[in-house]
Length: 312
Image (cartoon, rainbow, N blue to C red; front, top):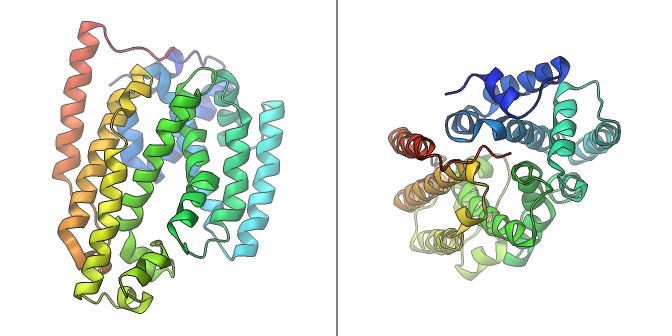
């Protein structure tokens, strides 16, 4: 694995202050999101790693503010953050090393500011005031307002000049699958926190109440509900097929790994059945290690043949 200094140089980041900013962001991401960070470091082309790390750090910052405190505190915090982000993007400067690094990444890669504005707006509306989904259409509106722009504020940095329409649409399909799998895997924890992330219309369709889920009742109706939800997730995951053709070559091993792990996690949810109501469902240790090792070997072979792009 290339050293961190090597990745900064490969990305053309030579200014000492900026190098320090990106290093601070990397340490922050490693503490909060060790698995995604290590996946980037191991599998992504070195020239892409600093940009993508800054994107993960920014996405995490917005998520944290949007999920901390009362709805009013969240909205206030996001309004203050939006002001700081706007200043950083306009001036390239900020008291916060994370925002300095992210603003530099956005300017260097030419990511359209609309994605960032949509993400921050969605954070203050769809996420800060989240009270569940009435229907499948409400879930789709949540993706459009918050989850999709948030993903693009991160993954959009892989493209010089930002994603085109086809690439953005591919990531919209990806986030649909990822969000469904995530909601199902975190069902127990979300319910414990007072969040129901399955559409209420789906519960009504299967004659299941919120109390049935909160009390982890293992009934035929509950199992049918969970089967229906996992089938929707499975269909969404199948729709992601072909995403690698829309990804920059230097990031393809990362995205292939993410997609495979989503499949592992969804399979674990399907095996858990009503047990997913009692504790959150991970994919264990063995599956990620096998997937990462296989992806690392594949990337190394591709690098030897000269087929992996540097991302520049």
